[in-house]
Length: 432
Image 1 (cartoon, rainbow, N blue to C red):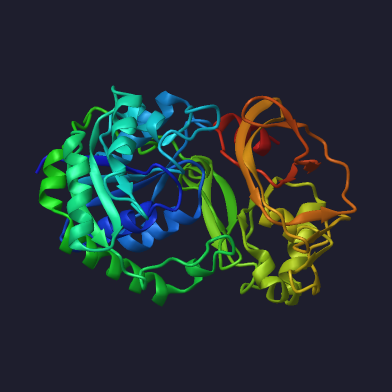
Image 2: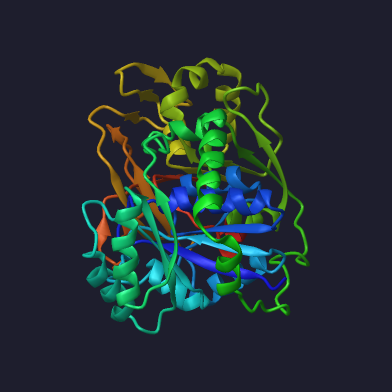
């Protein structure tokens, strides 16, 4: 079969993109298709859900943190071996970091992908006509493949919606009936990702609805994609380095970009370990403590004194260490949970981290380390108390200064920003 590829988009957030994407990935996978999931933007949670549904690592495609050329190469590299590439969009179709720059629409344009709209017509019927018309004609160069109506109340409701779509020339690809049991709990604490039974049940339920109410054969026929076979798998022939790299990965630390791991692999061999469960830090030339939810496992982390002592000893040598967001909280003097319980952490820094009075801080970031420009993304509810002085200024997506701190002790780097690793940055960090 010819490969297919499309991008799932919606007029707004909370329209059902994630559930439809999960349903498609699971349905296509169990029908024997080789699927490759992608996520537009910097989100960590959706790629985890994608992997659970498909069994395949999902890849972030981000037009702020990566150039258009890099995104094209990245997409084609991972898409090439697959039968179907499914890209989940972010927020509303045209919502970007600067007008529509970095939006789902921008990504669809850069990759030449058709767009499958997901529209939840709550308290709407024929009024979806001008909404669909506006989306179709706002950027007429985009290929709107069709629409999937989500949470449709009845056959009569669907009839009104079909009339509206037909009248503005938008194909109806399917409709998912209202099912109040098909829900993903709030993701800001990440609890759903720690319940494998709930994930399995949700993926199978979503897939059953997708198979029953969407013509998958027609969808794949309509979204055939001309892959470029001359592009080989990224990094497949690149020489491997000799460094030993230890990466924390467990319940508390798991916000890890697929491409950051690929980049680290170019410099050496990765050993994964658990700050919760393991008593021995692997021998390493670089230690990576990614983000996650240490606040949910603060007691377990604090009780593993053997690991805490080894990580502190490593960091006090000012050896190469990257600690992002949750990883930075782990290096703090203590961590105060939302229940106002305080637990001692590694104690490399004098400040404490607290979930008390939690407020969301979010946005793209730009900074420079070792003379190398870097980009990343900040997303957290915690804040620091009695902080050490930061050593680098960070900017937002439009170049305005922000108060996101970065701490550095020799080659120990700690910040709330989740970084996109680059070869020049890692080379400088690992220099003798």
